[in-house]
Image (cartoon, rainbow over all chains, first blue to last red):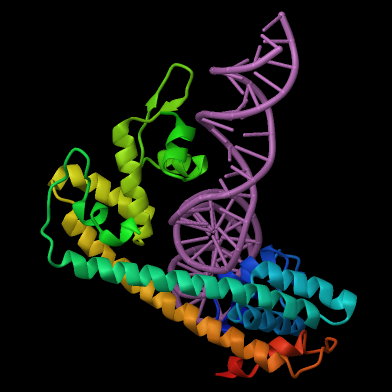
Length: 136
Length: 136
DNA sequence: ATAAACCTGTGAGCCGCTCACAGGTCAACA
DNA sequence: TGTTGACCTGTGAGCGGCTCACAGGTTTAT
């Protein structure tokens, strides 16, 4: 299979396939004309990569899993260790997004009662600089 | 003030100040030795930038606000328009993080009852590939 | 004078793609 | 046989928002 075929088969962009190939997650054959050819094993591998990505693993995590896999004969401990780490990060980012959303909502509702104003010597936009939740 | 002084005063890294300067958000004076010197107006400006960042504006948004500000004599409409857009994105990302977190939690709890297994011909890590929520 | 501490600007690197672009391949038609 | 045109290819660069590495300049203490 060439890049477009494998990309279409797994419903992702050719650029993503090429990216994974570039960083060494996929290692296709090269033909005489320089084109890359992907075998069924590469499809399995790519499917695995996509599953792992959707579970929050980074591409470096995946690289680590794929590298240690044939060595230790069981990538599972690595997988368990890594998802623990990524889950903590995800929860932190979830929390951050939550707080940001609250701040933004509060700002927009507060701004509804405030008029537009031109900048002054020490204020660029009184909406932003005067937003109360910034003083916390 | 030189870069370290302004950075310390607003409790951010020199690299961040330099980054904002590099992209044109800050325009300090240059002295004979090539050092950049920041005036009080730059401190006001930087304080504004940080406030806007903490409200979810991108640096490009801020650039737009700062550029249109002296032209139209009131950046507020721009600010109102932009935060609307960023709030929608934030809510989307919040939702995405929520779903990812749920998926990861479900995976880890499901994996507690599963043993480690070596890879097979068509499976790299049965934990990941066999995770039920992937099939949705 | 000199040594050490500190500070400077510039360039490159990070992640995970996405886009731009010049050129190659291949089937259909003249 | 030539040629048009659609499609496909690989490579390099770009995105945001910083962060890091590094070579060299400045300041302070001796």
